[in-house]
Length: 113
Image (cartoon, rainbow, N blue to C red):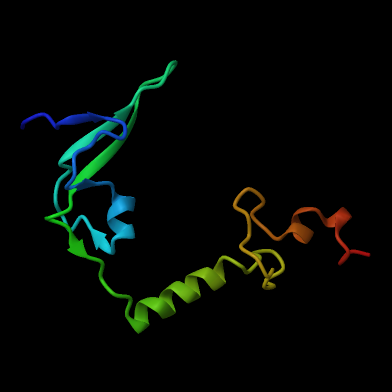
């Protein structure tokens, strides 16, 4: 396997893009392999690396179907339900707490008063 071309940060030639740049253009890599990489040097650690894909081989983003929209809405709704009190918290439950704020801190809660 041949080595990937490596470019310095902000010096990649036209025709290459990162995943985020492709997404901003409404494209996706579409199964192609990484074509090159960018490296940004850092002082105390290894360089930051960003993988680049060829824009001419990229494919359009697949459209969302009604079934996919429904599944996404259901998954987001499940992230709002507290596993302890089973109520809709009105916000996404933080993974660091594992439950809604009133259940995580019952003494500070207005529910316990």
